[in-house]
Amino acid sequence: MGMSTPRARAIGINHIAFEVTDLDATLDWYGRYFDLNLRGRRPTMAWIDLGDQFLALSEAPAGTRSPDRSRHVGLVVDDKEALRDALAAGGEVVAASGSLRVRDPSGNQLEIVDYRDVQFTKTDAVLRGMELEALGKSDAALAELRDKGLLD
Figure 1: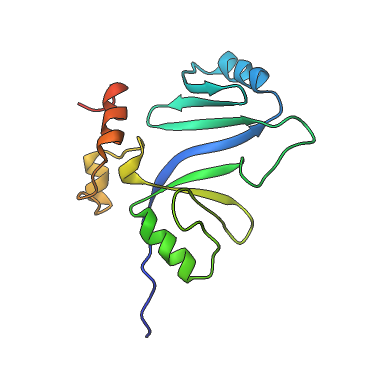
Figure 2: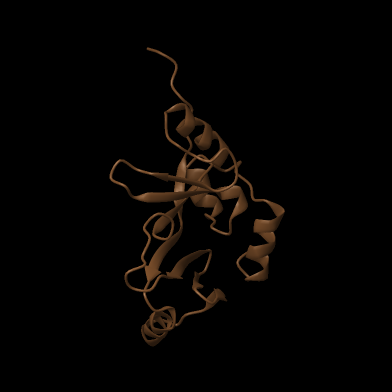
């Protein structure tokens, strides 16, 4: 059998991004039913904190919605750059550096993020069970987790 292309390990979901027609009305709706904490807010974007994950809301008024960038799932992997190389070797069109976005065969968009660089985390027991106990976090990701009280 021939040599296979190295693959990244999918670890979890960092965020879900929705496109909304009215950001204020959407935030009001979420606030009526959920105890929500905003991670951040801009005129046309808001991020609802879900602990070490988040829901990203991007306003695009009716008739101007653009599925090209807004709606996606943030997928956490153990090695974003190895995946970028594998995707490029497999003929997928991906940026040479920076943000890594790709569509599956059905057109679903994935934004790939590296476990080491984001708040999203797994317990030590889960990492051991996934045989990823050596996977660490960047100083910036550790600082974000500490600032939220999610890390000792």
